[in-house]
Image (cartoon, rainbow, N blue to C red; front, side):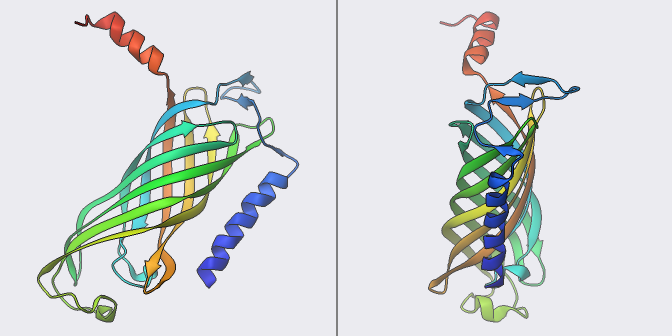
Length: 229
């Protein structure tokens, strides 16, 4: 219940930003680096991004006890308008050991998120409400019992365990524009079905950078440099 209340407070915070006088939805102008240089900057289009993530592996029922680790998270972003975009994300924590119970533990996340954006008036910053679906996959060698063995009862010592969870995501974020790129930070909860009920399975942090790509410009550069068939 405490976690649900925290998630609700995140929504309240974002809604407050939307109602705050300094925030304007659909702002078409964006400040870039430089002294008070306000220019028109196209918003719609395709962006590529990459982030450092800090999240956990859903080994135990209590997510607070789960092993946590830094990883990387590339993403493909489609800006639909000044106020909405879709983000396709992949996150990986690599392979590591978690003593005394797990060896060769690995985890991956696949996320599809809708971002609702509130742009600050005459500022290069954006507040983001994040809603989406996720798939969490992890695998590891179960090698020993621990204080939390009741949470993983049924696992045979020495066996390779593989799990895949589907759920939904809710969170909040912030983004700042510069002349040639944007930086962003996100805080999100992931919910999945655990013991016949949905519960928090992970709390993740993301910090990264993204840049707009123009396919026509890329094609032109390649066409100028190389001779095709």
